Length: 192
Image (cartoon, rainbow, N blue to C red):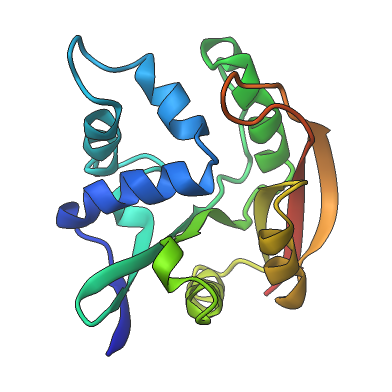
């Protein structure tokens, strides 16, 4: 049996893994600089997911389960309008293009993360989560939904194109050692 529900604090570890999966290793790279001495990166990510506020919070996540097992997650929220870029110098430079692309959609329903564990891929789960997110975006009175994808992620780009998204903007990736080395970040948009 399949169903979608709001994430709970108990889902935080899954959220940390799935966020890293969607971010192609960039979240773990980012979080490692924030870990306390001896803390595992996944534990730090799990702590971040348990926050009550902030973009990466379980409060913004929806979880898909099949037969009681977590298969995937989608994190989405309404972007601030106006979208303020403050204290950009406090963020690592490789995050800057993502922030600039997000800023192009003030008031958008922003899909920050969509990830499906490998054994559950190609079963239509991503489509189910996207349709659920579109409904939530309309309920939040957003007229547009947006997301950012890496230019070489052909499977994700095909999924989003099939759902009616198109490229509106792109910026070059700032290489991250051992993770994303090049290409473009592409902002995709769709009317809700």
